[in-house]
Image (cartoon, rainbow, N blue to C red):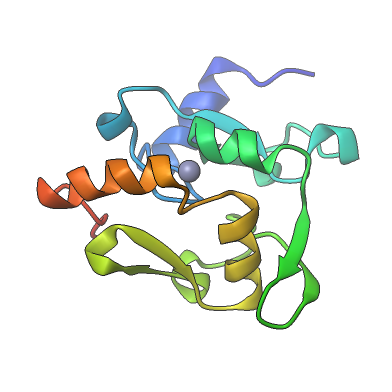
Length: 139
Ligand SMILES: [Zn+2]
């Protein structure tokens, strides 16, 4: 199976052309978003709309075939954030004016770590975006 260009455009447009995990937007990074299989294909995930999310290249690469991770606060294995069934604001909040992403729940904390949402490279970029008043996203 493959995902049609129409469906790719639909997924990205419905996400406002921003990553559904870290909220990085296409217009800031100058790269198209990629289509993430929420349940990876290697774990049986399909190409249906409910299993697809718009993601930045970074999040998609770090997520890879992961579907769960350890929450550092409770040391329990929990599912990663699912953009189709979870609400972003329930699980994440911006800190330091939009430079860092903080997980509010076990799912949020586990996802921040698994997708390296605060690694040195993205934090360096976010510092610039915040300084330019491009960040954090308003919603
Ligand atoms: Zn991302």
